[in-house]
Image 1 (spheres, rainbow, N blue to C red):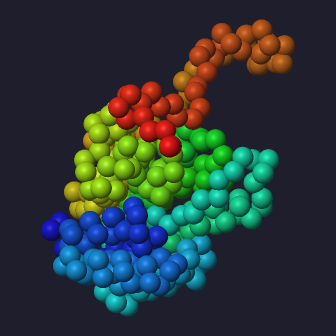
Image 2: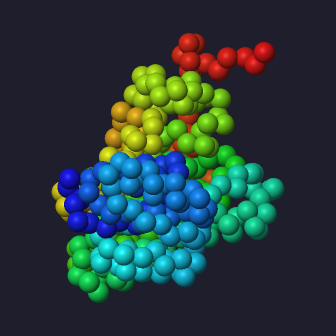
Amino acid sequence: MSLQGKVAIVTGSGRGLGLAYAQELARQGASVIINDVDEATAAEAVAAVEQAGGTASAVVAPVGPTETAKKLVDAAYDTYGRLDIVVTNAGVLRDTVTWKMSDEDFDLVINVHLRGTFTVVREAATRMREAGTPGRIICIGSPTGQRGNFGQTNYAAAKAGIVGMVRTWALELKKAGITANAVIPVAATAMTATVPYFAAAVEADAKGEPMPSFFRHDLGFGTAADVAGLIAYLASDEAAGVTGQAIGIGGDRLQLWSHPEPVATAYREGGWTYEALQSEFPEAVGELQSVGETFPPLPEELQPKPQS
């Protein structure tokens, strides 16, 4: 077990993807701090880890406040004597189009995803540096943060911000031997369960059956367990040289996302006036970049069945 003796915090790990991450870290030998806002859910997650032979305890609190970050980090040191790994997974959704999104919808998602990631990492990195621990920071992003998605202004802003913070932390924490990476998962979750396009995959997962190859291979869409291996790898000593990266995973597919780079560069002596841009912009920049994700048509046998 490559993580034997290490200690991990996984926020939002009472169920779903977060629980899968916690279970895999424990399977590889790490002691895990489970985090959820619901006491019963957190207790069930701890029991699931322990029944599989792992070690876990829980902190029941919402991420976002600095107080919660301190509770999580203190729990790791007070219970297990150290902290090596932090996985910031906790999140909520409040999806709606921009003109209908309230301040409360925006602030809640930003607070949990973005501020919750920042406060936990700040506290953990501070303590890791003080202890001289070569730690692992693993933050969870989303394809929405990379490319945008209709109705998810708040979520896209938070997830894009997380990747920006990860790149900064990779620079700031390098000297301390602490890596920082973002994982971009694509998996069956409560959110994708409501999307008709993924119905055949979600139904197979619910039955414990293999997902059709179209989803696993063509779309890179799989189960929570398919993502967990990457979390454990990035938490290991073998990944000491991997930092500042955004890595996508889902089903049978592994991807390395690029850092934003210029795709076209043009120069004009005297600068780019409004009049110059009117006449020369299309030729200067070439083909524009796409936004959002476009999925290929579902094979006929995988299309949702009409409701009777």
